[in-house]
Amino acid sequence: MTRKRKVVTVMSHVAVLRYVPGFILAKRPDIVVWQLNVYHEMELMLDKIREWEPDVLIIEYLPGITEELMELEIPKVVIQYDYEVGFQVCSIDVDDGQVGRLAGEFFLGKRLENFAYYGKAVQWSEQRLAGFGEVIGKSGGSVSTFIEPQEGGPSRYAEYWPNPTEELIEWLKELPKPCGLLAGHDPLGRAILEACVLAEVEVPREVAVLGVNDDPLVCLLSDPKLSS
Image: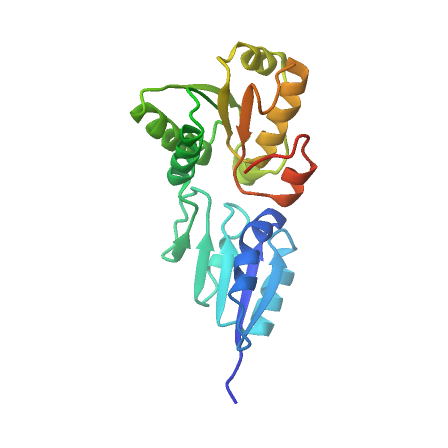
């Protein structure tokens, strides 16, 4: 009888939503997958992992939180969001530049001539903007930007949306229209939809909004529903 291979994933709720659906699709009868929340008490997690003796760990790397997991002598793959991991491990991440390029190609395919980006002052958002601007620039266009400040540390991927400010509302009013607007991720997409209501800007007739991550909860609860 073949021994079942044991995989332990240690991730936040957000990373679970983003990555575990892929694990489920790839699930095989000879593989058992356990999930642990990265914010559990560390000693308890370490005890459980040692007890389970997994063949591999899949870890969401968060500085100041997961270093002890990184030091376990178990094969591991690290999911990281533009952090410098500082360990000799296999690592995977989203190609944020390509995300932006795909969004640019999508809007150009809709024959739009005006473009905007609503993002955060963090590396992944800047990379998405760079990819977006690269494609739009090659077509002869330019991108108007509005960048929200971002707190440092593990909260950089916090799935919240900021309240619309007067500056954001004025920016939306002044955008040349019709406009294709890329939001850095889905919570920002929802935020910009709410701001469009306050700015009396029609979606999608005046501003077509596209989010990133395809989070079903955020996208389906937005009004109008958010494309992503």
